[in-house]
Length: 280
Image (cartoon, rainbow, N blue to C red; front, side, top):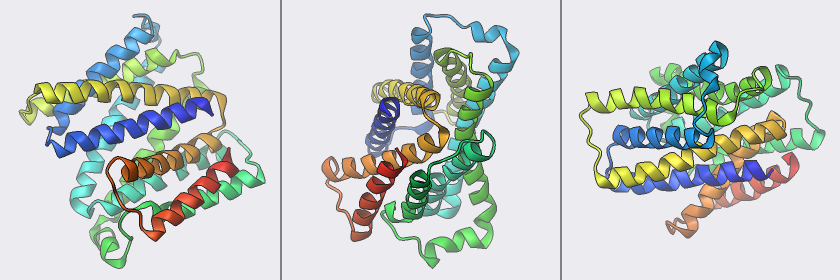
């Protein structure tokens, strides 16, 4: 559970960095370019400068696919927010963890204990309570009137991308994590650099600083997540990771941003804590 805790910690750090960057109006793609350059460099340092993976087509192509999916999911989230608003896309992203959880059971025959089943059910049932805004008929209207297709694409894109880490761990277990991540982040960097150039976004000193911090956190968040999948079953990692990120982000919001919790948010925290105990 230690690696999972570190992954959650880094993920919350990413969310905090993004919030600071958003408040200062940093250009998104320029920020991502620096982020992925730093993440690639950090992964290369971790691998000792070795990239044996490039001589093996299977893991190399798998890494390129993952890098493309990283950026695709991000683009898709931005597009879906424009079409559906913020509440539904964020909720769909959180709920997408049900896909890799189900995949771990159905594809890799992981058998959860009865208490873990109860924890998983509680975790996903409580997710709507995590949002600061209620999911109402008004927020659902854009989804039901022409936005369902985008919502489903977002849901499956995030879920499949997460599940592919499990697929890699089971089918290509010999890949060194740092080398694999170097390929993923380098691919993502090439794509986002093209987008930043087309949008004529500039890398200012402030963007550079935020991007460096984001890149280190991004690399280690994914690295520790891979290590967690190596020591724990997916049926534990996926729901616990999702709950942990939301739970810790909520607490950071209260103590750092002085956000106020509603009654439903308080109920979510209690249910999420209970779910974590049951799953872990």
